[in-house]
Image (cartoon, rainbow, N blue to C red; front, top):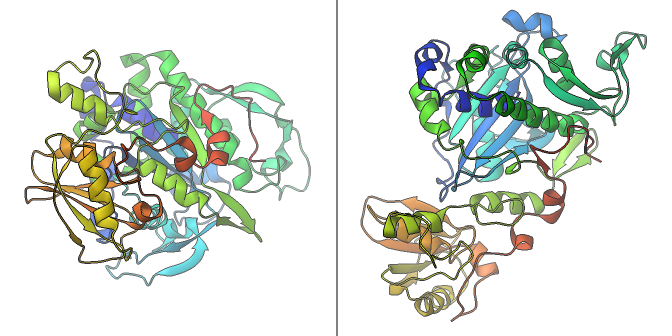
Length: 482
C-alpha cells in the first residue's frame, strides 16, 4: 500500500494528466494537525504513507472483516534526502506501543494524550470510516521528532486497482500458502492459494499477499513487514520497467487517486507534480527499506531505544543507510558559486567545513558549562567569524539548531555540517546563530579541530543498516524479520 506515494508522485510528473487527477484527489483537514510540531529538516523531506483497512464502501468485499471504522493496517515513513537521489522507507509496526498526543475529534473537541498504546490506535481516533490521518501524523512526529511534510492514505480498493493497472507485481513465497492460512477461522487447510516461489499477483491476490500473516513465520503483523517491503520494491520496479507513457500512467493514476486521501499540501495535481520532481532521480538501488528497531513486549511490540533515536537522528542529518551525507549541501554550494555544480576541485560532502565569510552567534542550550566557548573555538579554527557567545533562553535543547535569516540558507547549511544531526530553521530576522543541544554536548568536536561528516557507526544503527532492503534486491531474498 505504501507504494502509492512513490507511484502517484511519479505519475504526477506527466503534465497532461493533471486535470484528470485533480478531480480524483481527496484531502483531509489540516486543522487536526498539532500546533506543537518538530522544526523543518535541513534539506530532506518526510512523507507518511498509511494503508487503511476500512471495510466501508467498495472495500467491504476485499477486507474479509466487519465494521466500517478506518484502521491503519500498514504505515511507512518515507524520507527523501536533500540530494533528491536517495530515499528510505521506515516501516512502523502497527502493534508498536507509543504515546499518542491530543488529537482532534469530528465534533471539534480534542482528546487527552494517551500513553503506551498501539500505534494503529491513532488512526481510529474518532471512529470514522475515513480514519484520522492527522492524528497518526501527530503521533509519528511525536515518536520520531521529525516533521512530516506530507501524509498519504490509500485503502484496500485503491491498492487492489493499482496493482491491476500495472499488470501485476512479482512476489515470492518461502513456502506454500493455503486458504486456511489466509483465513484462520475457516476450520480447514483448504487448497493452495500461493505456491512456493516466484509468481505475479494483482488485484485481490496482491492484497491477500501483503495482508497475509498466518502460515508464515510467527503469524504476527511484524512478521509480514519484510514481505510488504519486498512488494513495494517490486511495484516500484515494475512501474520503472514499463516506462513513463500515457498508456500505462493514465489507468495507474486513476486507480491510485480515486481511493486515496492526502494532506492539503498535495491536494492538487500541480502540487503533486512539484513534489514529484524531487523523486525523479532516485534509482532502485538508492531506494531503501528498513524497520523501526523493535522487540516483543508480550503480545505487543516495544520500540527499542537508543537505536530508534539514532535512526531518527540519521534521517534528520540526511545520512543514508550506507553512511553517506545525502543532504546535497555541498552540491548546492557549488552551483551557487559557479553555476555549474561540477567545478574541478570542488569540495565533496565529506570535505572539511570552511567558514570563510560566515558570521555566527553561538548560544549554549544546555546546562554544560563552557560549551559555547568550546564550540566557538572550533568554529574560529574552521574560518567562521564568531560574533559572540551567550546562554540560550532555555537550557533543555536536545538537538543543536542553526537559525538563519533571508538569503542565508547556503551559509546556514554549511554551518550545520559542523554539527552532525543539527536542525536548520529559517527566521525573519537577518543573521545566523547556532543553539547548542545535548547532542553536541555529548559528542563535541575537539576545540581547534576541523570537523568532518560523522561516521556510519555514529549515525545509522548498524543492525538497522545491515537488514536494509534495496528496491533492486531479489523478491525472494530476506522475507522474514528473523
